[in-house]
Length: 331
Ligand code: F6P
Image (tube, rainbow, N blue to C red; front, side):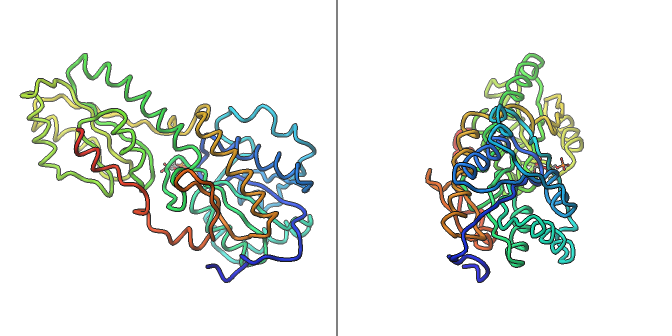
């Protein structure tokens, strides 16, 4: 339990600021919409912050006049209030500047939509007296305290769409396609899309078939009358061009590499992400109103929950369902 501000208080929340931080994710706008609409419904004063923590420190904070501020955004990718990363926010003097900006405007609470870096920022601000709530928004699904982050489902569908297309050309030329997907240090995007696409191999930080083994598997494919192959690999892991050269040398396949890159972050949010964002955005506001601070929202076993930020940050990732066994059986 946090020893900080997770206490019920007699002082009710009056005004909140909302920001998006870290890599943008489809569904952030839907979460922003839910926060704004829910807060206005509860009679709170609402402010938006441009550019994430940078805007907070610089005072790029503006009142939301009415509910129309978030009209027609539920289906839009990216974030209309911009996002960014601010490594300097780890410094106390920078955090204090942010608190001052909030105090100047009589804002007592902050809701931030982002990943674990965003949560660490909220934890620091909580220690300085701001009532904070985090909403998990990142394509990576690398937050242990929620089964799914906002943006993950859309990104997964985008990857599947790309792999379907690559498969068409890969099979027409009897090639092996080595496709790099995002996820920072989390393999969920690779593993989930690997299952959804029925690929030949998946390589992530936590799930690495020894190289010789999968090279051998590729050699064996010919015997199984499979003349093309798809391999998904998480980013930041190894040099995919070197691996492709090895596949070219040691198997009968011609191997081509594809890096999907930032197109994975764009596009309209899926219905799942819009609904998840709407639930978590509303829950964030209700959590504040009920006087629970320094919390993050999430979905666990299909139930909306909120837990202490420090507890969330300390949660082991292996809490979540591990799908690699299924990958092993079905490949
Ligand atoms: O966290 C989302 C993410 O897209 C990661 O998958 C990726 O490693 C990173 O952001 C890239 O960030 P940027 O666009 O700032 O280079």
